[in-house]
Image (tube, rainbow, N blue to C red; front, side, top):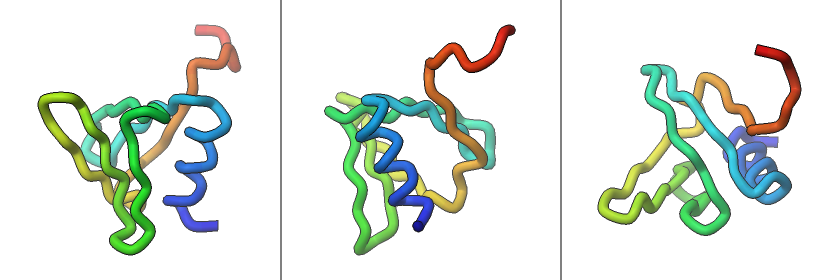
Amino acid sequence: MTKLKQLQKMVDEKGELMVMSDTGEKFELHKHNVKFDESSDLVEIDGGTKKFWLIPSKIAYYWTHDKAREE
């Protein structure tokens, strides 16, 4: 499974997904504001006043708001 498909699956299952790029930038992906383009291998985020395009291979890690661990 490609990283693009993994991200798409997680957003579909959880409704939202937080990601951090390899440069440390954080983004929130939501079902209503994200598109997964297989032809260009890009994640497009519509942030209202700005659009962002992420390259899946440049995403260092991702997480959800689930209570998986204690802070």
